Image 1 (tube, rainbow, N blue to C red):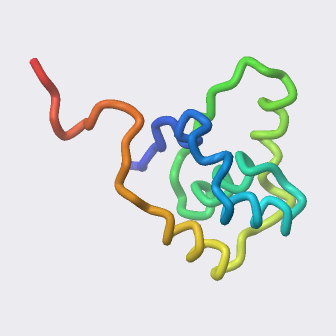
Image 2 (tube, rainbow, N blue to C red):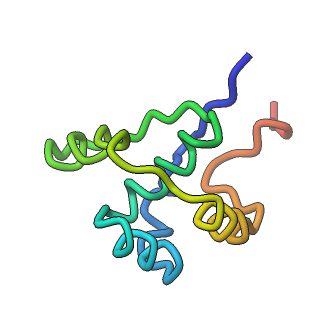
Length: 93
């Protein structure tokens, strides 16, 4: 069994985050690439959605850099247990 991220980019809601923008600048990557790399380094399956060819290519370019333990901890500290979709533990039938 493997965990898969649903809406790993939170539908763009994290793109203005100062910490993520700082990490993007530090690594010369986009905020989306930083978020997706965090998922990848946590062994979470990611299938980001985009119809934009540039973003699709950018989203796949995650293998030329790595986040440090400090970077990973900074991103971990952003967790607010928010959801952008339905809670899979609570379905309304």
